[in-house]
Structures are given as C-alpha cells and as structure tokens.
Image (cartoon, rainbow, N blue to C red; front, side):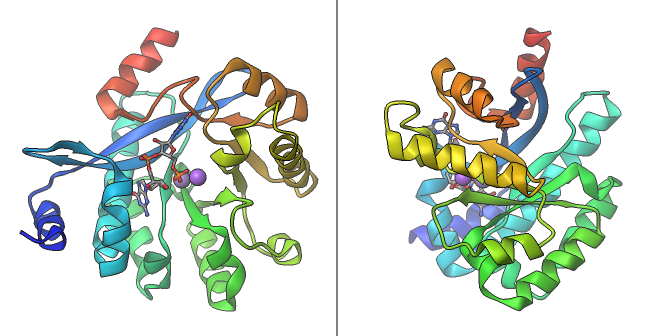
Length: 253
Ligand code: G
Ligand code: G
Ligand code: MN
Ligand code: NA
C-alpha cells in the first residue's frame, strides 16, 4: 500500500500517540511544562518517529487533520492532569505551516480548549519563525490566538529567517533555541556565541527562552550561566507517554 494511503488509514485507525517531553526551569530544577510530540504506533512496524511521516503529512495536507488531533489530545491530557492534581503548567504543541494557513485554525484551537474545558494559558503553540515573519496574515492570526489566552513560541529559533523589528511587534511569549546551537556548547565557539546571543535577545525583549536538546550537565551549566530560563532534552528526559511521564514526575519527588 502506498505510504500516504497507509498514513491516512492510520489516522482513521487511531494509531497515533502523543508523547510528552519535560521542560525544566534551570534555577529551580522544577518541571514547568511539556512539549507534545507525535509518534505513529504501527501495528507491525512498531513506533515510527515523526521525522519519517510528518514531511509526507505536510506535503499531502494530512497534517491539518493530524495536527488537530495532537492539539485535541493535548487539551484532553491537560484536563486529566488538572483533574488529578498533576503540576504541569502547560503543554506546547507544534503547529505546521499548513495548519496556520488554514482559515479555520483559530476556531479549531478555540473548540479544542472548550471541549476539554481548559483555559488557553495551558496551551503553548510552537510556530516556525520564517512563516510568522513573512506575512501580515499571520500577525493577525497570532493576535486572534492570543485573544484565546494561548501562549505563542517560536520553534527552532535561529535556523530560519527572522526580522528583529517584526519579532518585537508580534505578541510572542517564548523563543526556543534550536538543538543544533546547543550541540557544541562550550567547545564550538560559534554555537556557544549564538546560544548566548539568543538568550540575551530573549531577555532583552522580555521573552521566555527554552534551550532544546540539552544532553549533558556542561551544557546546562553554561546555559544557566547565560541566564537561560528553561531547558528540554535527554539530560532530563526523552519524550514519554503520559503514563510514564507520571512515573518520571513521582520518581523525581
Ligand atoms: O520527536 P522527534 O524529535 O522525533 O520529532 C521530530 C520532528 O517532528 C520535530 O521537528 C518535531 O517538531 C516534529 N513533530 C513532532 N510532533 C509533531 C506534531 O504534532 N506536529 C508537527 N507539525 N510536527 C511534529
Ligand atoms: O519540535 P522540535 O523540532 O523541537 O522537536 C524536538 C525533537 O528533538 C523531538 O523529536 C525530540 O525527540 C528530539 N530531542 C529532544 N531532546 C533531545 C536531545 O537531548 N537530543 C537529541 N538528539 N534529540 C532530542
Ligand atoms: Mn517543537
Ligand atoms: Na525545535
């Protein structure tokens, strides 16, 4: 069967699962929120990472449906965590360009929040920088999303195209430093300088900043020294199913 047909079928068969990766506040070492990351639980092939099917989903437009599923699933999970007193302050959800270009996107977000009965501030939407910087259409949409109370972050910051003037105008809450810049800290002088510059930029603009792909204590130590607020990466935890995330939280207490 063609991969695309199989992918469409997977959506109908509920073969997708959301995993959640913790974000930690560096100073307190406390869990603040999580990023939702989709996986495909293929009945024969097992767990398929998003890199193997997200590009096809984006190309084919299936990402609109898939992205809506992740968003609704994240809202549903947040409701459960709230009901069980689990202290997770927000879930960050990746939003692809195709989703944001969809005229119904704001309505979909509103409906997902309402159906789960959660306030907007429990959801952070991760947008990509090049897209957001490009057109006024997106500035209007971000205003509409902010009116729902959701937080907005720029994912993979520094890898795309950004206008600092525009960044200042947009009501953005968070910058996420791309993993590729964290990789070389502290041996790689360029990456180290770029990471530090992004932290300073974020602080100067009163934005939260998250370092992604933090894998060792040395990186964490340097990032803390630069004043980076939040970290995410294998040093703390890989993305986990909701149940296992609960175990991870309990084990840290
Ligand atoms: O979890 P992992 O590191 O394998 O994710 C690989 C890529 O897939 C990342 O760039 C991530 O942003 C993307 N991805 C994961 N889940 C989603 C999702 O729900 N929607 C979109 N658009 N991208 C996702
Ligand atoms: O949405 P985004 O492009 O930021 O996706 C984050 C991806 O990075 C996820 O697929 C996640 O599994 C992966 N990831 C998270 N932490 C680490 C890490 O410490 N090291 C590496 N190599 N990958 C990571
Ligand atoms: Mn992301
Ligand atoms: Na990223």
